Image (cartoon, rainbow, N blue to C red; front, side):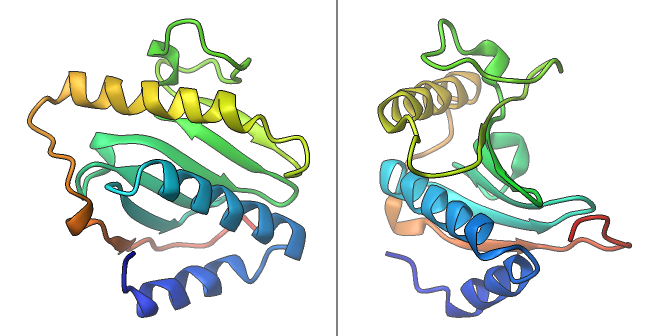
Length: 154
């Protein structure tokens, strides 16, 4: 897979402020997405109210198909164009123009097949919206995106 030991260390530092259960959920979901979509880059943000891992077919957030947002007691498994997914297998939350998410509080009841199907649909939408995106697993990487300011998250 990817050799990004510095980036991995930074991600683990960002996640260190969360309880072990939430960190575990995040890392297992990250592995789930990476195995399903190994060509995706991972953009890491230490945001204002959450640590986020954004999965994109480029190094830009605008090309992202899904993301994980880590909160105090759960992780949102988000779909960046979730409102455009027709007949989603799961009830997704969110009222905004595009983003929808599935809230994960534990891994025991994770609907893996449904999430896997949604991931495939999300990637298809990304490629339809921007056909010149290339799927190239050799170039997958982890990118730490700079953020600044006071944090409201744990």
